[in-house]
Image (cartoon, rainbow, N blue to C red; front, side):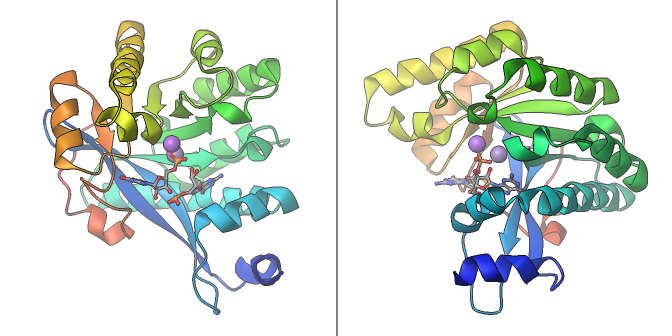
Length: 250
Ligand code: G
Ligand code: G
Ligand code: MN
Ligand code: NA
């Protein structure tokens, strides 16, 4: 297909870039970090990540592209810091990438080459990619010992959400946007969302609620003391725009 063929040349043609979406502490209104999101602009138009990332995963190209994402995000984090903005950056990692031989060394190298403090890098892992709990736990622990932070992404929609909470050492719980989405239409969704937030609080783990789009959703979250992410605060932005946000000093 056109997408597949295009992707084979995308790296050499420098067609990838990263955009960054702030995560905002709802109480203070300040950004506590940003999430790096991959974009691809091939010569024939634009293709959404929902379309091309699965192809990168199927073909195994995600390993090479993921390495670029990791290095690029760390370098950008360093650039912001050099300009006076110290803010953490989160990178999405696919299952294939996480269990790839040498992943932990790659992370270490990206930290060293950029010179950022390990705690400024967060690795987002989707619970659905955790098929081998023992192996994943081992890698997560190695990453933790480098000092990087781990976030559980899209929390609540996988097959084993509560098991993930029980077994993994993580620093951030990102609640899938579907829960907030349904809150205004469905009483049960509100109960589930507040209970998931409560789990994070009782574990002493910061909670990020994804997909904040409306004033109404923002008002719902305000008393809950969480971090929000979504179009209501900001769409993913090119790196230079991130300097316009005021950040919590980490
Ligand atoms: O970026 P949205 O903006 O459309 O992203 C769509 C999906 O692609 C999400 O599930 C997101 O986690 C994933 N994604 C975005 N950037 C990356 C990336 O750099 N690596 C991986 N593995 N997934 C990514
Ligand atoms: O799977 P992950 O949570 O990493 O993916 C984040 C995805 O959510 C990206 O595609 C990003 O562009 C998208 N996103 C970010 N904020 C919003 C929002 O407020 N509403 C919706 N529908 N999508 C969002
Ligand atoms: Mn994510
Ligand atoms: Na998510």
